[in-house]
Length: 261
Image 1 (tube, rainbow, N blue to C red):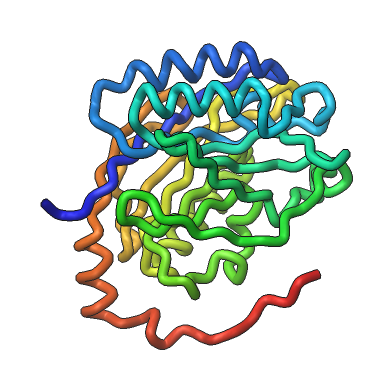
Image 2 (image 1 turned 90 degrees about the vertical axis):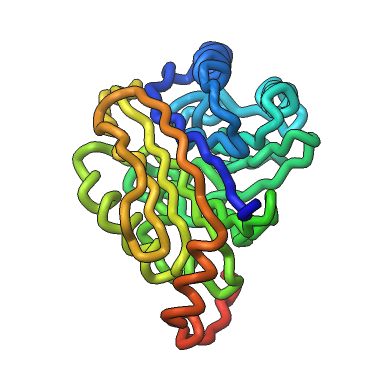
C-alpha cells in the first residue's frame, strides 16, 4: 500500500473566550466525520478565538483541553492539531499541540507574535521550530503570522508537510491565499492552512479560505470561503518523492543557520 496521510480540515466559527463551549462544538464536528482520518487540523486558538485576554482562557498542559484532546484522539484513533493559550512558568504562550492517539504530545510555540494586535506584549514568542514524524510523514507545524516569514519555514529538514493553524482576518485574506501556495512551491512540500470563519469578540471578520496545496502549488481541496465546513484530503508520499527526484529544486537551496535571539 502507498504511504498516505488522510487529513480533515475543520474550518469553523469559534465561541469567544469560551473553552468549554468550543470543546463541545469541536467534539460534535470531529465526531461527525465518518471517513477514516489520520489527522484533524483545527484553527489557531481553537478554545477561545484570537484573544489578548490570556488570563481568562489560559490552561496548563495538564488542563481540561489537553485531557479532552487525548481522550478524543484515542477514541478517533487519529491525531488532533491546533493552538490554544497555555500558561507555563508565569508566562503565556500561543502554543500549537498535536496529540497522537497514543497520548504523545508534540508542541510548538508561535515564533512570530502578531505585533499589530499586541500579541507580543501578552504572549512569549517561541524560539524552536519543530519537525515530528507521524505515520511516515515529517510534519512541520506553524501558526498564522508565521506564514509571512519564509526563512522560518524554509525546508532545510526535508519535511513533507507544512501546516498552519490560523485566525487570519478577511481584510488580508489575499495574502493568506498567496503565501500558502508560495510556501508549498518553495519548500516542495504539501502545505495546509486551516483558518476560522465568523466574527470574533473584537468584531473582526474571518472568511476561512482553508486550503491544501501540493508540491507544485496545485490546490487540492474544494473548501468554500466564509462557511463552516470540513474537508478530508488524502496526501501521498509518492507525490513528494516523484517531483523532488524529478525536479531537484531542494538540492539547490541555500544553506544557512538561524541565530537565536
